[in-house]
Amino acid sequence: MSPPSAGPEGDRIELRGLRVLGTHGVLPEERDRPQPLELDLDVWVDMARAAASDALDDTVNYAELATAAADVVATQSFGLLEALAERIATVVLDADARISAVSVSVRKLRPPVALDMATVGVSVLRRSAAGA
Image 1 (cartoon, one colour):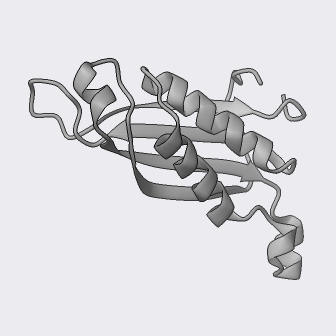
Image 2 (cartoon, rainbow, N blue to C red):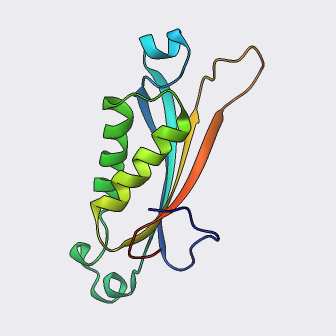
């Protein structure tokens, strides 16, 4: 899985505002108690077959993707949001061979900074080995 030089094009499934508690960060207080994180996923997949058939089996099930991403946040722990986003991207790409690329955005909703800041986050864009 390598970073693409340009963004993917075409059909995509969008998941917005998935909120999950997780223990991610480098500060001791971030490692000791769960904090709220929010995820956005863009999943590139050809939807022509699903559009024609109107059948769930002909597309990628977004509920399964959301559950897989939430499980990573809730059950694993990373020092950096970059590492967390990378792991989620890998899990999503591995979930279904029809997925050609994924963009993962992860935001801390209560960042540990001494400033008035709503969120802090990262985004990664990854392609499947087949789509690279």
